[in-house]
Image: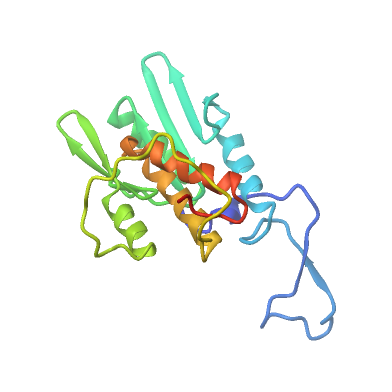
Length: 216
């Protein structure tokens, strides 16, 4: 779904300067009052979510564990809808119900049906028999490239479960980049739970060492 934030209705009064190239020559000092949200506004994500959730409230309920997940249950019919900004993953208990749901959403919002799920938030989805295989190979390659390790050879690197952290040691040249990589690795644990402990240690280092001094 493109231009998703244009669907959001603002509840606050927001003004903006006249767009470049569309200034009023008679009133160049006038400003515009927005009726709809725009990209860049801090209110935009909340306004879009509120608009979408209000429409889905006609039968759907938010999951208690994740407010981005909406569930519909009526008799034997069941629908799961996962929303992430302008991406939606939708599944239903029958193909007919799925088609009706897509048509109802398209009547209210401008969106495009991309067919079966193949890729979502860095995850590749492959069908195998009656199940789905989730992989993040491309995402892993991007992380290695960011860290300058794209050409490194793989090897087993067991994590020390009793690391001794110290305030002494060589400082990280770019603390921001270190934190970014630690966060990227956390997302990778969805399909690679075997690295979860190592990732948690990286995050721990980020939290207790403001200057980010590497352990010896």
